[in-house]
Length: 613
Image (cartoon, rainbow, N blue to C red; front, side, top):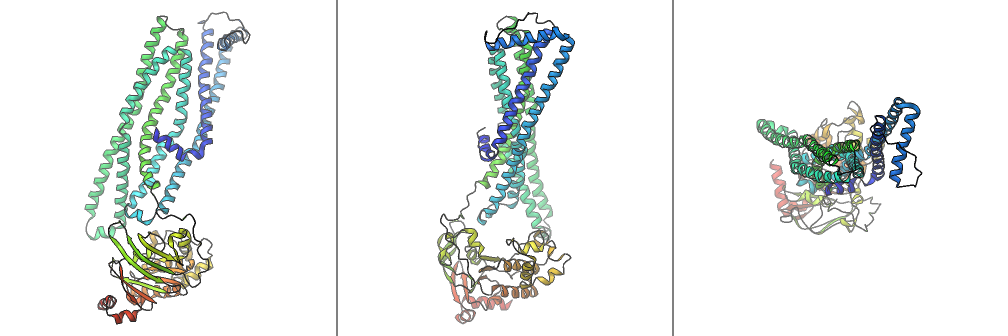
């Protein structure tokens, strides 16, 4: 229950008025239910001559309020019977019962009506918080997580909370109120019998708790296994060409079937245990009713209590009425254990700390950077795991408007170096500065707002070409997008598509070639018009013709701005203002293309190696 209260405090607090409304109507429902039984029993006793007492009206205040109230109610019943007769009294009683039942079911409906916005709202809030956290967490978080498992948490685990915790909120607000109300009536009718009931109920609760104790653990195993299954499916679809090329279909089928078989076994165990809740609660409830019937009948026969036989029947009706909410509350307990297991997995994301934070007193980013912004690396060292340094003692000054190229073998730290500028990662030692201030001094959104990034793999969304180019630029008009497409050498092939700029790009831009996707992503960067441009091997995966078109687009894009280029093909950066050669995380050579050729070092060796290809 501690986990439940923490859950409600975290997610249900915005819906406190819904909770208040539901509680009010649940109390009203319980009161009308008790009233219905209390109203019928005395009338039937008088109608069928089980009570032959001659009642006389008593003035209010002439005795205890409860005794006067009961006496005067019985007197009123006798007066009605004598006035309209037994048959019409029964009709009147039936009409009153219909009215009371109508009010009761309306109150029950209104209690559910109040809970529905909270139930759906809590699930929506959790899903929105999950998505916000997913997009805000740094890239480093996802180097240790599988995409399929993240999707499982966002969809499967949130769905489990919707099916368990959120769906149980109505029962949590209703069943305890009914149980407390019925117990109060039972105490009023016979405290001796009720004490006996108080001994029985904890025993039954302990038995139910023992059966469901391992449900949370099993549910957590099932959710983890589902995440593994989704990860395997996602990796298989993403790498289907490799799977087929290496004839590994059977191997992947065996892996997937093994995971689904484990999930099936865990699910069987959970559902069998959960299915045991209802029959066990019903059996234990029947035992409790039988024991109370025996014990209550015995003390009435022996004259050890003031309750009479009709009163005992009414007591048993109330006690039997408590069984159903008790069973429902037990089922809620089972369901909550499954939901809490899902919440535990969700909290791994919601509770993840984001080390990339905005400063308390940020420096304002200059608004006018017409010639680009300056970037500098001062004694920068960086490690992904805190043990092996990928970059060591990097010192580099990039003045506004310069084009600086980073070259070197794979794994030398080029991409890592440019990832430090927009704070995809934070440096371990030293400082990366933009416009003379450390990047940590700016708000992250302001820092990234002055940068445009074109990666080796162009990322397109399954949306229109217009929306892909205008991504991140919500104020862009069609004219703006067309101009950006022309600069990026993309306009011609776009207007040749069936719907022009409204053509859907497909999943990850699958409807276009690599060169076309890259030119669309360049058009996106052109539209943003960033002072600082980062090109991370933007042409390395293209054929010669596509590379020429993309290179032309990049040269237009690079004008009048600071550009840092990570280059694999050295022919594309021969005109750079400065070329830095990285080797094992260090800058080993700096200079222009001609200077580095004359130096006859690492750079010249790389150039000659490419000429041999």
